[in-house]
Image 1: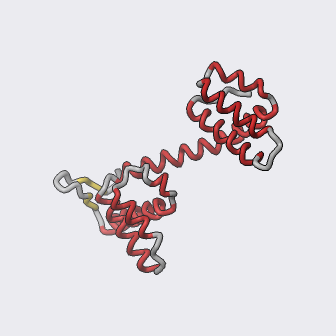
Image 2: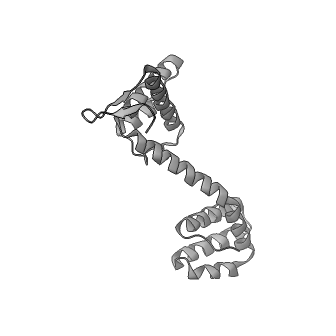
Image 3: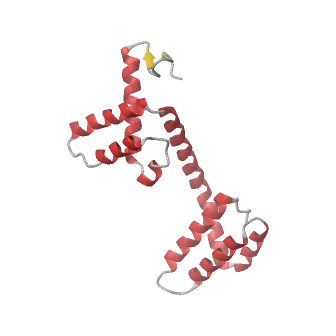
Length: 175
């Protein structure tokens, strides 16, 4: 919990030692509202936020006037204060951590993609750790990506995405 803040058990309101602390906390809620507004809708609905906050964020994207937009984000910050905003912050941090982990794994998955497209026998080594249906789908995607046609780039992307999905379920072994 932030220094100088206390929770009163009667109304679930936060009491502050000074007006400055209260303003800093309000600004942090507005910053959180801005972060939520920048997110994709599909990711945002996975967060532990209410439908009214989601509707307010969608409405904020339609506002063009700067002062009206500023007031609207203050309103969203107020709505966030009324909900379980520490859970929202934790969920955002977890998503950012997962995204960063995916970026770290990306070169490894690209290497796997190149090796699989060059050598189909490498797929057989996955039978010990992965589902046979996943491996069969991977074989079909590799076969489609290996063909000389106009959709080769798209098919290579599908192979990469499928390898990423398999890696998320069960980490791929080192090549």
